[in-house]
Amino acid sequence: MSRPHAGNPAEILSEEAIQLPAVVARNERLARFKFWPKLLGVLARVPFVDDLLAVYYCAVDPKTPSKVKAVLLATIAYFIIPSDLLPDFLVGLGFTDDAAVLTAALTLVGGHITDRHRMRAKAELARLKARGRR
Image 1 (cartoon, one colour):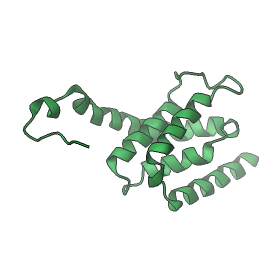
Image 2 (image 1 turned 45 degrees about the vertical axis):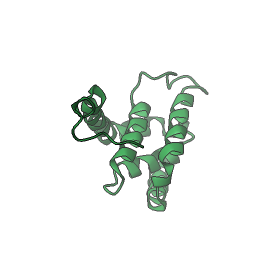
Image 3 (image 1 turned 90 degrees about the vertical axis):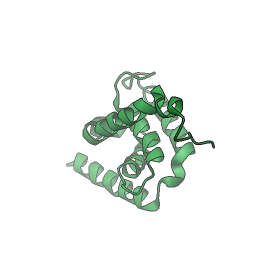
């Protein structure tokens, strides 16, 4: 993989390089403030919630590399944003595109999701389900 040279202003000031930090910051805000309300609203209908929670815990882990965080936060943002390819309210189809995006992210950076992230996800899912039964 080639890296931009510090002396090449065209690469340093490319539109993508300038916008990427802003996009990652926006996705991080979405994840921090809108992930939980969205998840609670669809918990019973999302078959991949355990993986999604593991992705969340990996994305907010300070030890996760920034490029990995960028992919994971984009995945979470896609799940949160209501205007996606297939509306989430379509029974049986609504979360198909979200599952595809999640699968792609796991294929790319899933090796960074640790047992600790998965254990936290499992514990949180058990807590949420128990809370929902009350």
